[in-house]
Image (cartoon, rainbow, N blue to C red; front, side, top):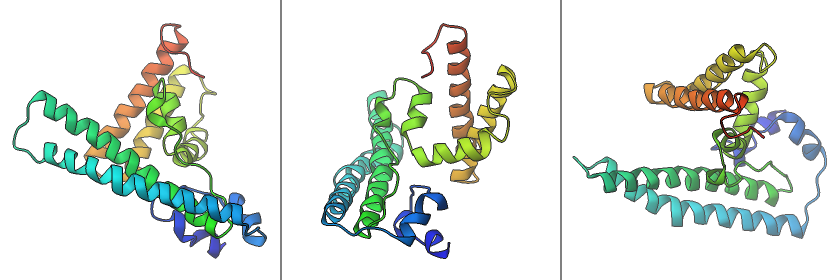
Length: 202
């Protein structure tokens, strides 16, 4: 159990793994050339995302956000650059963790699956930081009652889950606002879908 808790590749940025996912691999695992090669490829891809994509996007975002005042175009460039900085930074770290683990013969779950291609916010959260979404679902949303106690309770559970998910990122007002916005978006989407006037939930 101590080895599972201290598995260093995933401690910085995930994936968030459960003991059951690693228990058998810690007892016995195969060290193969195929795993090592895939691990090196994952690690290289993650490092390229971080250095070649996330960092330049970060420079553009910082330039926009640190400017005294910007016009509409520059503001949008800053917002888009920041969105891609977060994605390439976070998914890059996750890919590096997956790659490092494969070098040791350990398989970790994928953490990102083209989230910006998602057609709606529910699908976005199935693709973005997937292990955190799974954690929030299993340890917050479902214990709160999930969707088993009517529509209103479902909406409140979604809001509470995303609000607590925001606080998980940090105890600051911007994370609270982030959680409320995402929770509100999920509630609106579910409501419109149930009324037959929104994008149907998969």
